Structure formats: C-alpha cells, structure tokens
Figure 1 (cartoon, helix red, strand yellow):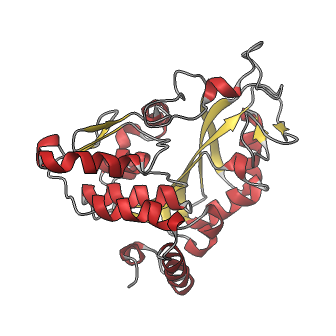
Figure 2 (cartoon, helix red, strand yellow):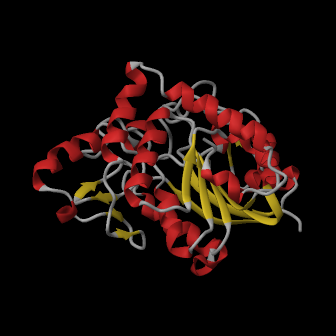
Length: 325
C-alpha cells in the first residue's frame, strides 16, 4: 500500500522510486528477527492506543492523559515505552508516563524559534525533518498547522518509536519513513521547509548533502540547519582522526563561518547564523530513560574546553538559508 504522504508531494518527486524504496524498507523491518521484533512488538502494542488529549505547545510533548489508559494496563504501557531506551530526544509525557530524555530538546527548539516567527512560516507547508529520531521536533511543529511533516529516519529503533508515538497521537499530517538524508534527491522540489539537525557532521561530504537538500526544496523554500561545531572565527573545520567527543562517524566539525561558506557553496542564499552556544551537561545528560554515558563523559576532566581526545569542546550552531525563487 503506498504511503499516504505521497499525495502531498510535488509532481517533480520520483514517486516510483520512493514507493519501491518504501516497500523494500518495510519488508526489511518486517523480518522475523530478534533485532526487529525488539522494537516492532512494543510499537504494535503502543499503537493500539489513541490519545484523546494532545498538547505540543509546551516543553514536554503530551500525548494522552493517565486516566485514558486503564490502571491494569499502565505497567505494560510503561514497559513498552522503555523498550525504546535509550531515549535521546524529549521530554514526552505519554498517558501519564513522564519520559526525561538525554537531550533537553526544548532548549534547541527555543533557540530555533527566531528563524520561524510565531511558527507562522510552517502554516500549510510541506516540511521534512531529516534524521527525526523519535519525532520530538515534528510534534513541536504541529501547533503551526503544517500540511505535512515527513520524518526521515533510517534507524530501526527510532523509526518504530516515532511510529508508535505518531499512532498514539493520531495526527494525519505527521508521517515517518525509513529514509536517510541520501534519499533527498528523490524528493526534488517537494518541501517548503527542511530541518537538517544533527546530520552534517556525520556526512563525509557536507556540501554534497547541502546540495541534495537544496534539490529537495521548492523554489523559495527554506532550510534550518543545526550542527555540532567548534569555536573560532576562521572558515575552518575539524576533521578528527578517529572519534570526536567519543562519537564515531564524525567527519567534519565546522566553525560558524565555515558552515556559512558550505551553505553558500551549495547554492543557498540569505544564509544566516542565528545561534551559537556551547554544549553542556545541563542540556545533554544521563536520565532514567538514558542510562549510558553522556556529555560529561565526553569532555576532558582536566580542561572542560577540550574533549577527551583533546579537540576543542563542541558548540551547537543554528543557521537558516533559502533556495532562490
């Protein structure tokens, strides 16, 4: 069955390839293997519930109230939610279960709001959230009334978590598929706004990734990009020898001026850096729902301005850019 989001895409989308990819990825996650059942089964359990109450206007995304689920069923519901640990983005409240994620994602959301005055920029728009994780930012977009928010999420754990949360929320204008940033060229001219957050430093060719993003935008469409960064005024990027802050798969960590240079070279216009803040253990930390190492373990105990590898400690940058009309 074709995904419903296809109906919202422009004629320039490669529907045939998108549908083939969708079906292929769905068959992949439906395999009878433990690694898939581990997340598929709790997703199906949770998807039976439909929330009467949904509030995405505050720091915590609230899906349902506790009284909407019979008391006898609440322990199983909580265990199904815990099956998706570690929870990276949040906070959420799901039928009274309070989920304190590793990242206090509401802080990043508050920092990006200046680029979306009163969220009016999203009203009636077709939006993509690339690497959407469990969909926290997608839910935060809902009060603006977007026509569609499509989440790209290739990781099985996060895909099923996002699917479960969306099923419980019951919002027809939210969708998620097992897609990666590399699939953006299939969506040529489809999106009014693209959120590309926490992706660029994991790409071996960030300018090519930005060019693919430009292709996926409609004329005049906007990009909101967020990335890990290093401090400095020069247009330089760190290329770590192995890990960066213990994270493998980190290719290039730019300064703010370097990020703007990448955007310009990719073909964007009106490129603006509107937030630059150092990371901290107040924003990324272990919780009951994420019990592994976190920011404090990634930073040198002798010098908090350095990572454990001796590189400059990370900042987070937010920039906006536009595709020519």
